[in-house]
Length: 174
Image 1 (cartoon, rainbow, N blue to C red):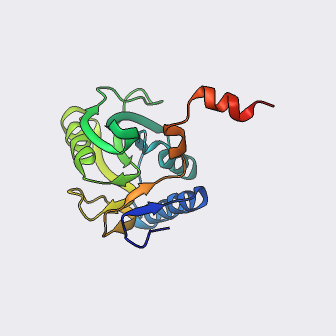
Image 2: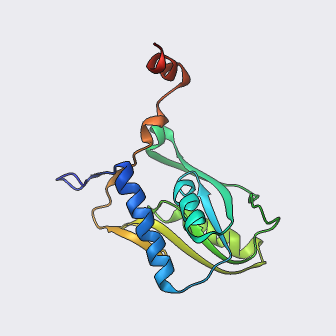
């Protein structure tokens, strides 16, 4: 649900999963065949997992991080892992790169640059995201929603960003 001022988008778990299913449909209907899904952790892990299951393709993971400050609401320096975790030994062939959104585009541009320069066995690379913001300097190959007002997206699992183990103990104490 987008707020009236267009500055915040609140997404429920049902909406989130529906959007991932719509992303799967877009990729499928394009007719493009791929060998592996590479998700960017953390944002791309949930969509990557679901797409991996739907397409029955192996899931590789590359860790990136830039939203660490202010409970994950302020972009900081971008860190990209030097290694990719994959069940196939080495990532190769046609790869679908998955993240949750193209926000500024900095992360996706940097990751694609790194993959093209450092992972020569990748023969083709396409990108898929749930949301693309208007301010993004990156245009993904597949996207479900374009956000012209660049809202802050409140994803359904964000409550865990500030939840700590002691609070869980208190919550589940009888």
